[in-house]
Length: 61
Image (cartoon, rainbow, N blue to C red; front, side, top):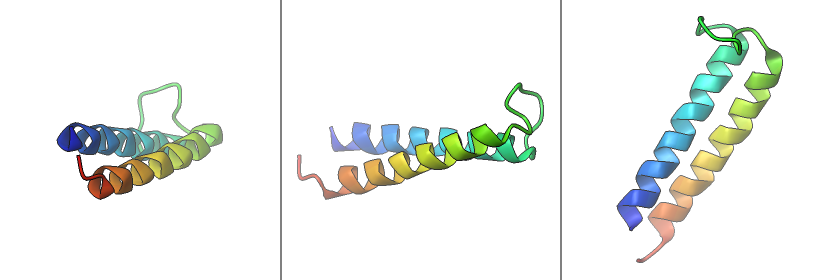
């Protein structure tokens, strides 16, 4: 169960990083490219991923 939580948190963190990069315009090819709102959505999503990683590593079961 701990491994599943860890992997899910990594996926959320990765999606947040992708959305942030698209919001900055560094990753092209999407409707999100260059839209500042996706930078902020990505940063919040990355924060959720980091909290998830902490939670996954902290849990005992």
